[in-house]
Image (tube, rainbow, N blue to C red; front, side, top):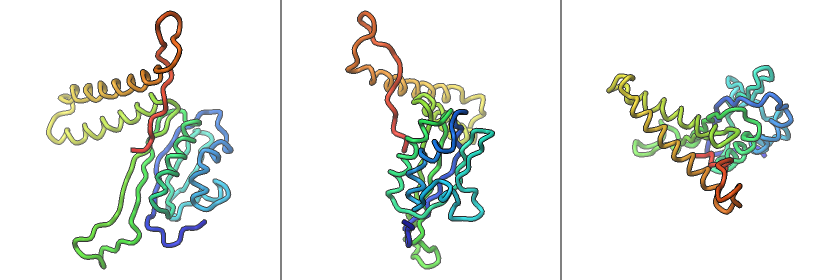
Length: 206
């Protein structure tokens, strides 16, 4: 149903590269939480954004690319909806990808509010990918970009190799912990050992 007087305008932005065998019906199924939240009966019906100058939700079949620049009115419950959509996208994604979700307070008016009042704007990053390793790779890449960008104000890029190496070490440790956690309770492979394969899906909302 359409949400009148919704406390937020919620903007979702990002590009997800999909597997070459993915068809539109699979995309519609993966994004069902989003288009149902918008009160539509299909992805096509909900693909238009609340703002005409935004592309909305588009699928470039030639490039196998899902492009999202889409705004919908909503509330805090959209966080759970977004998590469900990310789980669906994991099944059809080719590589890891970030999705930015911005919450803009529709009830805040800078001209009318007192100087002490603050808007309830919020922001979160979501990550999708075919495997935990693919998701962690894009998380790592974004973190390196952010850290290097901040530190380049004070240091040359050539001086930051150790910082990047430390970030890589942290992500390697996290991935190994995920892999090892999946071995608990599994019967051993072969004689006295367990294989290091698979891994549980990490949370996608941070």
